[in-house]
Image 1 (cartoon, rainbow, N blue to C red):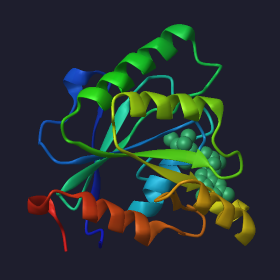
Image 2: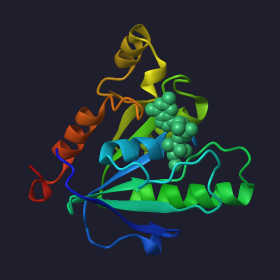
Image 3: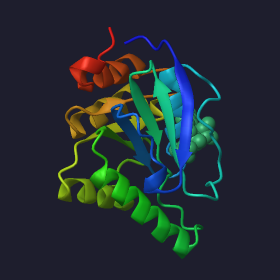
Image 4: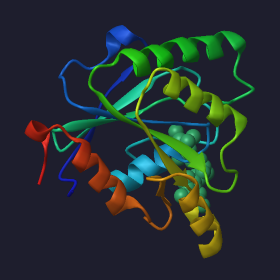
Length: 191
Ligand SMILES: Nc1nc2c(ncn2[C@@H]2O[C@H](COP(=O)(O)OP(=O)(O)O)[C@@H](O)[C@H]2O)c(=O)[nH]1
Ligand SMILES: [Mg+2]
């Protein structure tokens, strides 16, 4: 798939604020600092479109980016930041869970895992949640540039159909874009 256009569409802090256009959505979720924003920018070949930072955002926002006028990428706030206030964690949980469970146009969920750390307890909890609601998700290992060939081969064996990506080298970009294209409803498909 060729990215012809990508734009920030809107942020939502509640379910009421979600976009209404009906376009299929692909959500990105993972621990804070897993490389979510960097991966999205790499896929879109837009360096600063999705904001990257080392600190967790103060507000819990879902950020929507429209691509090729045919689908949306959704940057979900990261999980696993112990420094986050309890009330904020609760807000995160309710908003994200409601979005994931109820959003009709949600087509796939990319669950990002830092290649260096592997799947951690908090990632397992997210997988259990997704499995419980029978939500389809796709594992993407990030920061693959930090691993050697053998370590990458080991990861590949762990999850069938997982992707291994690096925002630094661009590894995994073609495969991930192809995966998105294959999952688009046919009327929205781009050549
Ligand atoms: N080496 C390497 N570092 C990365 C990669 N992706 C992100 N990072 C770094 O990891 C940190 C967190 O990245 P960010 O995209 O903001 O993560 P987010 O919190 O999940 O959105 C930043 O310092 C990035 O420069 C990658 O593919 N390789
Ligand atoms: Mg981010």
